Image (cartoon, rainbow, N blue to C red):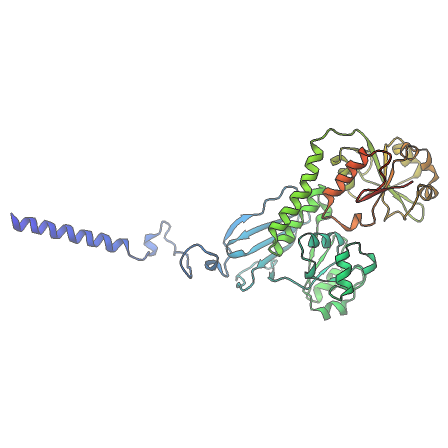
Length: 400
């Protein structure tokens, strides 16, 4: 009996040793649920960034509120894929590779790699430059197609005067020798980029990304493009804070009662040709967001952005009862007084807004800045609620 008990005890001990050995065994393909090899890791074996060097393992996508012409996908290890579209087709795919990280192999042919730190950029668009400014990244821009005297952002002027940002000529005819000498490999243009310039830059080995912000449907979507550049420079927190502050201004206005006041937006060229903003232009939408009504809503350029050419008589018939006029100062000459404006179009004299002294102009920097469209919408709301003593806002001033 004792011999039998000892034998059973020995068998149980052996079984326990076998179980303990199995628990400490390295996994093999037969130990995985799908028969695949386990992921290779380095370092501590924990799920840390160092385990994803040279690999693209999807993590999440950036949340966007209004913009629909770009997306940012985040991957483990700090990699990011920025995708820009024209509303239908992809125009740019940029893989942002963190400093000291390896470039993943087997990337699609249409993916352009940008290794951080990203510097020495040609930025042609002034609104885009304002987004760089909003997140404190102006020093990454080395080339511009806007002369120092045309800038209203003082910090840009300072950089140009210090020789840290160089004017290379008009966006239609840039100085290619200067571009080559600078060594830049990345250019950001608005959708006004001409085909011949794009082809020449490509031939010089300069990658061109189109900033599609001006084609977005909602004014705040233009501001939200700051998040794209935030991702490019690891400034997501700054970009998010900037966008949220601008969006909050508009949300506060939306909580108030609409003013019921109508607004006409137009300008007259030096040759006497009148252009009004289309029904679905972003400036018309800014009026609506500010609590007003665009006088030509649903009447001209429906579904279109930008402007429409109008005969003076047709404009007068449609806009004579508008409560307010916003004259686009930088595009339509630069009247200093109401009398200056009436010299350009005496037919305006009997308009309701002129008679009541409600003629306002955009400030000189209005079209140079897209980072603060929330503030501009707030200004339109203030205009609609201003008393007779108010004649100057941040982005609007009254003609008297």
